[in-house]
Figure (cartoon, one colour):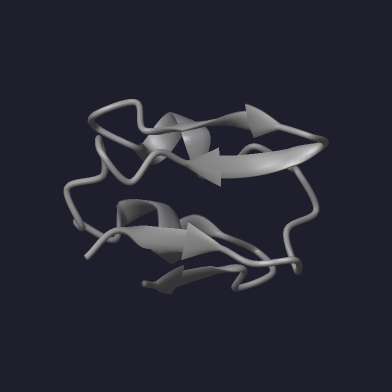
Length: 56
């Protein structure tokens, strides 16, 4: 199951560069994870300063 970004996201972009499959992009003023691309590795969650990324 893909990771998800919650409303706690401050759109800092730290997660986007960590994603090995480029599943994270900006959408409506926050970051968004494409569930079709996400490989469930958790690299993004490890760098999120607000802990806004959760296993979905």
